[in-house]
Length: 254
Image 1 (cartoon, rainbow, N blue to C red):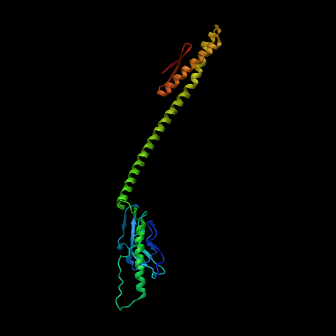
Image 2 (tube, rainbow, N blue to C red):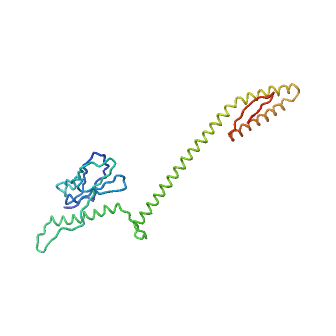
Image 3 (spheres, helix red, strand yellow):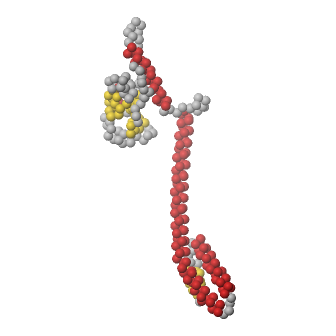
């Protein structure tokens, strides 16, 4: 009979720790002509021993190809399982001179040749193929790819570490800024109260004594700028400021 499908492997089964039956839909000539491949971590693969499962084939492999693999024990959750074609690369059919020439045997021989070609194609589709003109073998190319992947992972790890350091530094900066803001807010009211105190205690008597008012205002501005400069320097260097009064003047203690 004709081979009507190119499929030579089952679906990719993600095991749940319960399922034990895994169907496949490609033609084989005997139950031993399939393989069961499993992977736990998605990298390392292994082929299960035939002692760990049984195979039930559909009776009509031409019209309903395939069957079901029944495992004795359900694979663990997270395991990936695939049923693959494992037909031997042999030609068991022999025609003798003046012997019987049966169409069924001839069809089986053609089917077997097609199946073997599909089996090889399934593997080639998963293979790394280098250009015909390449000087490197697939193994060398794969080694380079894996080396690049290892370096990329290393750089990604370093980038993550640097990112964490930046976050920590940012948190320290924000914490310092909050402390500065709190300190400035704390002294703001005292600064203006004391400034008004000095103005009324010093400037008004001077005004009454005949000193021009605009001159008193300029002195007051210069005095304010000096205090603000002290506040800024204290915030930068992390010093503390204390205010006090001595006579009629404002004292800054750093």
